[in-house]
Image (cartoon, rainbow, N blue to C red; front, side):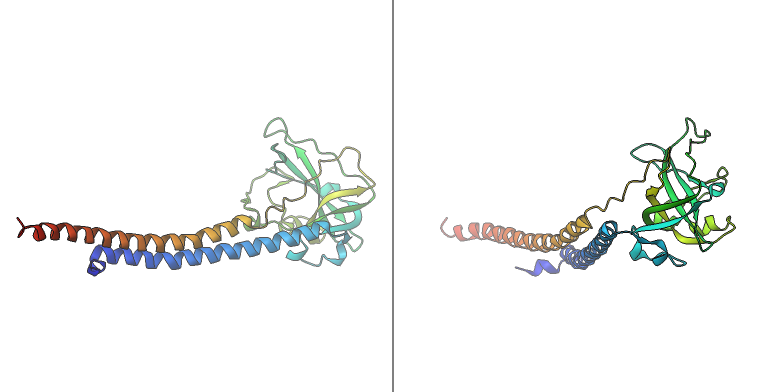
Length: 262
């Protein structure tokens, strides 16, 4: 009755099932790994956003650590308005615009890039935006510590030939090459400034932490449920084939059993 399982058509089906099961296992494990990674990142960012501010000097060496991303920091110095930059293609609340970057000179001779906020784009692509100037003199800045951007981390392709004073990435290595002083290897999204400026760019909103990888967890469970569907469907097809063959056998036997009586 079960010899049909060794026919070419059924052998092909067995092979498909044997291939999809480990594939679904690996896909599920990958999604669970992404869930753990994103959940850990979400917890770290949430904790950093809620932590009290600390001096930038206590965290910022030559490079900012991944664990300190979005940590609230304080730093004091004076703005170098002459080397300010605009970051293109930075929409906010659905509006096209620019981020306004200004180096803040520190007491040790270094500087940190401060993202002072967002300004809307000009009336045309060639019209420069209206940028409020930074305050003169000593200021105290509180903001969120950010990692230097790259093409890989941001998904933004860095292009050449931009208008003077404009960039696409907040990359401290690239920006620092055009400055006469050393930059801290990261930047700060300004949240509070003392003394406050008069007209000022719009603040950059805090990051959306999200669900912490909840979708990845659901996808992982889904892939593993597909294993049960594949095995269950395989068994169901076998049972249906057996039932059909038994029914055909009974139909063949019925006329043979009725022939002597006739």
